[in-house]
Amino acid sequence: MSASAPTPPDPTDEAPRGLLTAYRTMAGIVGVLLVVLCLVGLPLNEAHLLDPSWFPVGSEPQQVGDAISTYLGVAHGWLYMIFVLVAFVLSRRERWGLGFTLGTLLAGTVPILSFWAERRATRAVHAAHPELRDPVRT
Image (cartoon, rainbow, N blue to C red; front, side, top):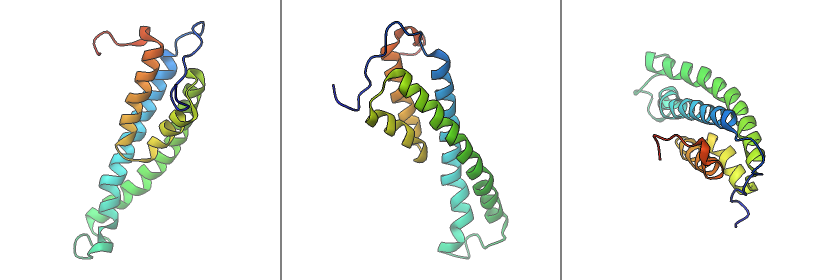
């Protein structure tokens, strides 16, 4: 087994249903906020740097981009800290390796990648705790 792959948790431990739900919720929220921030807010706010005629400073789209960047940026920062805490607790509970843990924690900083990391982590938990699998999803 590689150093970054999760190691099986202690079978006497209770399944981490609530912790996995918290992790998945935070990963989804952080991921959506980061996508909106990076693919909507920042381009609208900073487009004037590429060509001032696109969205001049003070124009409505630039102001919307500024508000998105300001408010969602702060919200993402705070919520990312909660995500890191929840993901770290889950990683220790599930005894993930260092590489797997760091990849999961850092995925919240890259747009779209957080969704992949959430699925990867969920699969790892489901592999260790088959009773947590949703019977409808495979």
